[in-house]
Length: 289
Image 1 (cartoon, rainbow, N blue to C red):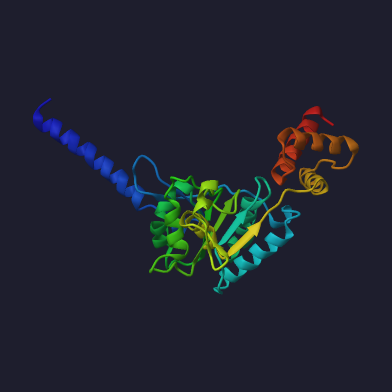
Image 2: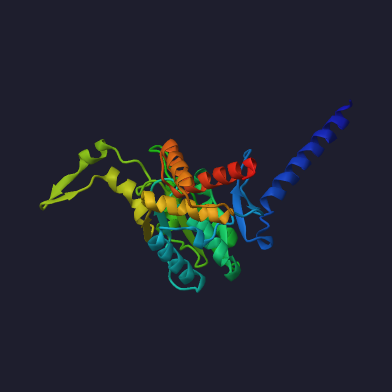
């Protein structure tokens, strides 16, 4: 192969890579969908990837979380109406309905212009770029960060702090942030952090390390706590999902099996209830009962 041929082949390969790079960068497809994920891989710039298959969860499917459900629905309606609304942090044990509530709100209000962008924790550094993409566009955008928590050495939470309430440049009115977490304070708190606490005029003032760690949670205007379900609540959720699947939900056999399932999984959560209902409905169908 001559030097000229080798040069042109390498040039063609470079052009192909550049075309793919710019295609990824300029293809948010934001006008063609109602929900997206922020995708970033192989060192390429981030892009919005449209979501085409949605979790069909409805607000009526979420039982025994009436207070946080009412608060989130009210806040979302304010946001959609262009009224003041708060960024929200939903925290509590796994499987208690935090992320399901955000998805159910999207399903309920997408027809009214609610849009959703899901961002993974490691991509929070791209939040300013994401917000720039949707600034001024029609629709009201929920930036959704699921299962949010940070390691002590993780500095990406600072990007979230800036977007929430820490930059000279304000967040657009058509953007709100909903986040879920298993803990109220998103950055781990250690016993040693309290060693810097000092008494001032008879009051305890936390050290800088503690203040830094709790300051992120405080930038969410709406804090909603979720709690483990009581046994009766868990069984009621089981019956709800069994009825939705067209399976008989009453009887001692079903109750005993549902409680054994919760014991085996170490949780009486809504997620465990739905998983049991799917398992039980499948068993009944397979046995031809």
